Image (cartoon, rainbow, N blue to C red; front, side):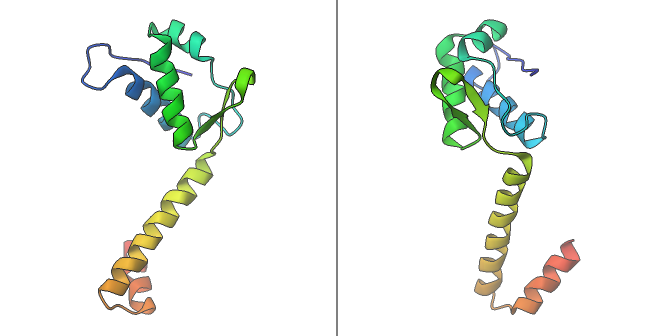
Amino acid sequence: MDITVDPVGLTPPYEQVRSQIEALIRAGELARGTRLPTVRQLSLDLGLAVNTVARAYKELEADRLVETRGRNGTFVLASRSQIDDAATHTAAVKLAQAAREAGLSFAEAAEILQRAW
């Protein structure tokens, strides 16, 4: 897992770690079931405080991207397809709501989607 942290960047270090792990999951580079390095190990590797990495893992867990299984470690919970499916579903719901609010029929909304495809 290749993660880098810019200690003088505007983004807090925990957010840099969180966003890079999320990106690896979304790209499919970290598959479902992959065990992440321990908080202690990743903090040593990156030269960060343990609490910084712990916060990144906690936020990833809150987003249901990883889960911590006690002493067994932290594992990738979501797969790329699950993330993409959730995002696609959310976009479809928004399209349906917008189409209804605009007074469009299903056929008209489908035509808009077809043109965008």
